[in-house]
Image 1 (cartoon, one colour):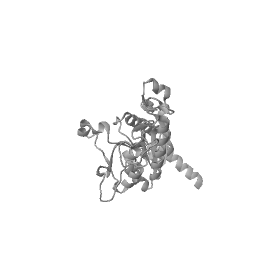
Image 2 (cartoon, rainbow, N blue to C red; image 1 turned 135 degrees about the vertical axis):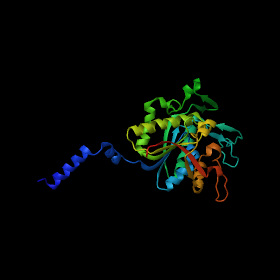
Image 3 (cartoon, rainbow, N blue to C red; image 1 turned 90 degrees about the vertical axis):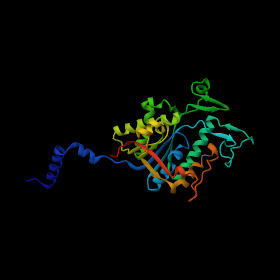
Image 4 (tube, rainbow, N blue to C red; image 1 turned 120 degrees about the vertical axis):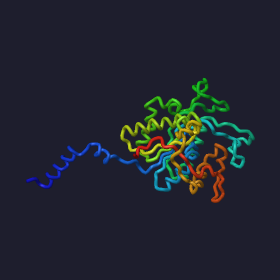
Length: 296
């Protein structure tokens, strides 16, 4: 007569032999963590494309990961801020003109601004330092292909525009997904309005699909509605129509507080939101397109 212990072992063996293997795999599949990761090209892109959604999900108990994947070597100004007259001045000499910041200082300034913005949400900042295709060296613009670009280029990983060709570079993003195993990832549109936006989005797409192939628990990949999504053909066929709509009215103050940390861009954007005063009505609802849903 079999003992209770031996009977239990026999039962397990029978289940392993006859129970459908794919059902056992489905039952044991690990779910993504309660985590939202926003993958932005530049220091302020997380806030721009999904700041309200980011704040809302963090308030709902999600861990927030604030990712800047370029090294921010351009787009930073000293002296008077360019667009927002009420903003503070980055004045070093009292000059009234606008002067670009050199690459190394731009990296430092914009990273510090991003860290402050990430702290507004209570999120974790991550910096990947993929290089951009141009930068300022002193008062001179140095685009890729010029002698100055190759002689003076600042430190960083591969240029983001070609990083998608290398498994080494894709693994930088893949390792980030392995580390956090996010339920939601938000990034720019493929073929977005800027090359470093669209190429970075494709870098995330490649890393996300690799994570799925390796059974890393990642959930949904959402993209911002820009670039070719807004073109007539995409709109008429429905491919550019957002299927995710997040109401963020109550979280606009958080988004704007974070945006206002990026002083080097245009005086901290100077955005505000008072209940009942819709200063930015188009931002009350943030919309995205689901590119991958790995939760089904």
